[in-house]
Amino acid sequence: MRVAIIGAGPSGFFVAGEILKRCPGCEVHLLEKRVAPYGLVRYGVAPDHLLTRRAIKLFDQIADHARFQYYGNVEVNRDVTLETLRQSYHAVILCAGAEVPNRPDVPGARLRGAVDALDLARWANGEAEAFDAAWLDGVRDVVIIGNGNVALDAARLFLRGAATWVATDIAPYAMEALAHHRVASVTIAGRRSAAEASFTEAEWNEVVGLPGWSVAADETGPFGPLPEKPGSDRHLVFRSRLHTACLLGGERVVGVRFSHADTGATVELPAHLVVFATGHRAPRWEGLPYDAARGVIRNQRGAVTGAPGVYVCGWIKRGAKGLIGLNRKDAIETVATMLEDREVLAARQPEPADWIEACRARGVRIVTWADWKRLDATETARGASVGRPRLTLSRNEALALL
Ligand SMILES: Cc1cc2nc3c(=O)[nH]c(=O)nc-3n(C[C@H](O)[C@H](O)[C@H](O)COP(=O)(O)OP(=O)(O)OC[C@H]3O[C@@H](n4cnc5c(N)ncnc54)[C@H](O)[C@@H]3O)c2cc1C
Image: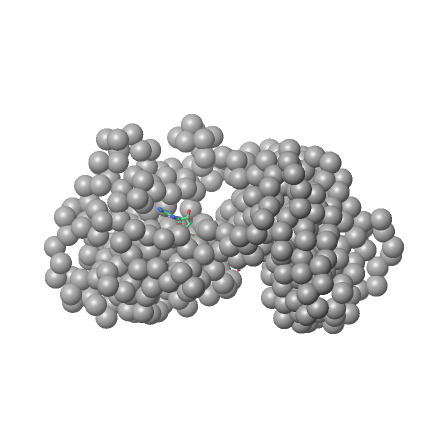
């Protein structure tokens, strides 16, 4: 059997590994729209959480398998259609994630100075075009809306001492921009009570313990009282039960108006940068059923409803929740579901995968695994030359090098 997997994030690799293990003779083709693999592990996970990127070692072992092929820089539904893939493979598994931010649809939400936390993370991780660093000029007050670890990741960008970024793989332009920021107040505002916030303890402790910042909260959170810290003129504040009503400003954002969940009282906070860490949903995929309430492709244990031979795994299947490791459990379920259909799938007679040559003929520079390994070596060598773990190549730099 030949299986195409769309998306080289954790769920794509875990699915590939599971198929290679459980399905002897099965060939796996992994298609990825970015040049580089690893999905959010590369461009979402915070650059100062290098250990979290350890999962990459495991993904690399899977990619070394003889029955595995990587097709990077191939965007499905731009370079090749999902329909073509369905005709070319016995099965197609979508592991394309949930990249669409859930920015609340409130007045002012698109003002200059309002950004999604994922775009900030992409910027910090080497996708320069994701955020305009000029928006940081003169910013003193930052409000981050959201009560999960992604909000904490965004806060650390402003709270960490400039000198500490050297040991991380943050992009050099981001390191430079963050060395000069003037942010003196960061407020993390959530809709729920502090006790219901979805921070994890280690991440929360890390942020509240960062030196040089006082820390305060309007309610005691799930991890007990805040640490005693010396006074400072830079303040981190946790606010709870605040519903975003609108963003204030003209040409650019100057504040956020909230309404208090219990009292209905209006609360206004100054903000020259507003970061939305309010979750994500999967995009719609033409021809596949969409569950708008959950922001996922409609499926039963990974089999897409009404689309024989098409499966889903990861955030596109169960919503934008959960850590990297959870996608492994999810992959086990999806592959088991696919293998229940094995007889029907194996009886299909897909056309050969001509899409690869068709893409090349149209000028798509398909990135192979060997190409990626060359790029990876270049990134680490460039990093080593300036005492950094890695200097990430932009898409254009990578393609130019190849
Ligand atoms: C900002 C942020 C920080 C996070 N930090 C952590 C952390 O510190 N620790 C942790 O355990 N978890 C973290 N997570 C969660 C973790 O990243 C997810 O659990 C995991 O990445 C989900 O895997 P996935 O494969 O479903 O999706 P993704 O990782 O999003 O992978 C999807 C892949 O599909 C590709 N793709 C999309 N559309 C197409 C297309 N049309 N054609 C081809 N390819 C396509 C994308 O480019 C991407 O590479 C974080 C998430 C976010 C958003």
